[in-house]
Length: 546
Image (cartoon, rainbow, N blue to C red; front, side):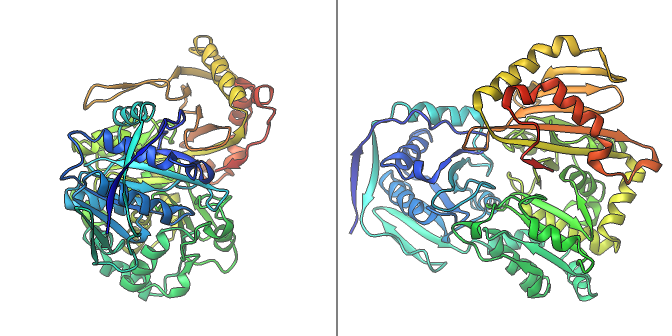
């Protein structure tokens, strides 16, 4: 039925993985041999051949997901993979993929997603390789994959019919490879039941507590229905946009105040439910809302950390916490109070992997709406929602009360991120070089009544393996705790994205409830002046403010 074929090919020069794998427009991946070259490069760098290897593959259901999975199935078989687990219908969230790798001791996994990027025929597609610990491949691995992609001259693929992925529990043999179709939700849902007090959360919903969860027509819709409705008793009307669609319903699957506008509008209405949440395309990001209240991702990490004992899976204490460098310092205050380590890493979840594997941290998070723990090696949107539900079930306070009580105890880190998307790449590069050239003059200088304590391009020294990752973003840190950070993002596919992070800290109890943009206005203006963003990009206003 199936035959193995060797296909001659030529390298593409643009297959260098970014922060979260290889992301390109769908039309790029549809080029002859493009996807196949990259998949073969992954297989060729996996060590002593693929014979005997066991892998998992799944995706967020975006356009081209179904076709790509069939190609990967046939390539895995032709390369000698012994077992390939595939999510039913080709669906498997990024957190669930990480769990499957860890639970079954697999050699790794391939995730088909461009995360929060738009989908559809004119949208984006992506391929990410996760290693045996369940986490994203580290830079040393992605560098080998890229090097191989530049020299590849052939790939192997099985010739034969597509594999039916409609029913879980079914096994098919392609050449000598067993293709096992798995339920994308069951293993993950069982893990969540072991971490959180589902009975307590069921009592919360039974008391009349109301929730609104928006899956943005992405993969978490199938997880939300099984966990929130079927297992926790939330009414079906708690769900919005929970049918995964190849184009995400024409929306942008990014859970922030701009792209989850429908949810935000309902949560800030007079008839808002008690709690609101959303996740992104592949299910690893989250947004948390209360009635007329937005919880910043930085505050969410800090609040989860300070209330960790509410969840059974974490009530024995935390080994430590970690945040990405651009993320606000809110969790730092919690860590100092708890007398546990707090690590500052570069952006990219892979940097948390070493700390998690070494049992040096339990919780970690990024300002880009990602929160997670040692239960897997990816950030996890549904997990974060469940943690908040567990806290709310135990404390029986509103989201805003929990947040404001946290500020009164630890102080408030006012925080915002201004994204300038799809700007000219050359202009963005020149802007960053301009900033780097100013660093020596900024250190120790007083600017607008604020004294600069640190001015550098962040360099991370990994405490586990001793590796260094430099040029991770320009930091300007003031003595009173305020910060401005500038970075070029590695997740876009068009032009360049400049991210500017602005943070101000206060313990003044009379200043805990001000508008964030107003409180930070002097620092926002200073960021424009220091970067000369209008001169370099022609843009004065950001595309997105979070």
